[in-house]
Image (cartoon, rainbow, N blue to C red; front, side, top):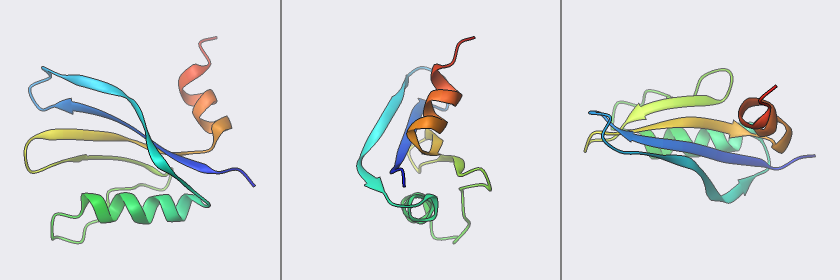
Length: 85
């Protein structure tokens, strides 16, 4: 079974700063564990989940920083971001 990595990018709402990809220090055993973690971090008190059915997300923090990315196996990451063919 492959580990799941939380991969994310950040940007300011005005587009002035953009970073990524960044990888969480923690590896997850399942996509669901990663999803639960991201939803907890993103929770602004509304209880609305930010992770979609593809285990990808986008949300804005209270200070205007946009986070977007997903929960990926190594193969999923390579397919999504590294295959330039």
